[in-house]
Length: 239
Image (cartoon, rainbow, N blue to C red; front, side):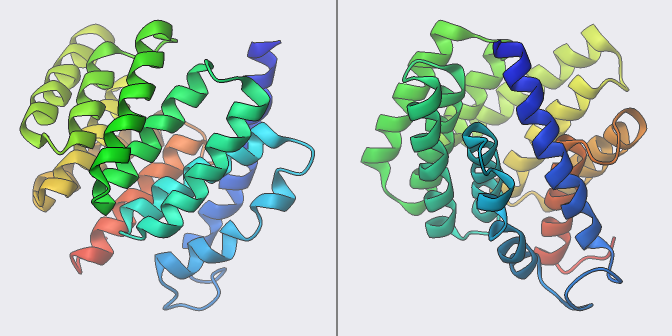
């Protein structure tokens, strides 16, 4: 039952992202100079329709948009989406579900970046406690690195993410999607550290791995496009 629910959730999100990926085609955008924020706003309004009769799908989409808005520095919007995701997951999947744990970490991350440190640390502690009890296929290095990043301990997080990248390359080979995930995670951190040149390299390498190994409507491929596009916009670089 759980595996079927996860497949259904992933398939619905992939369909939605497949439509979103098309927005990066200027011919299909609202207008040629539309910003990432404007395009996100356009598609965020469709979440309720897409998640109709599928609350967990709606939660997944809220989490996705929360992360996208967080990357743009739109913390209030990010918090709104992630709190909606958390409420849905708690109601539908229970307080101890691993997806609730991940969403708690997402909320803690946003609150920390907003400067609400007390609440951020509370949610991060709750999320880590649940994840450590679950594991649920999530690598322990990633858990610790994400927690360190959420606390603002970027140096510790960088050490752990780089170690994770080395481990995944040794275990899976250089062109595996697991390596793509590690590159993407490191790119996110480097962006927050202001190391934009290296972050761009990480994002481009992750995107190429995902381009070779994933269908175009896969969520991870869309995340890579969003992250690289946002970085290029912020630093006024060309693709």
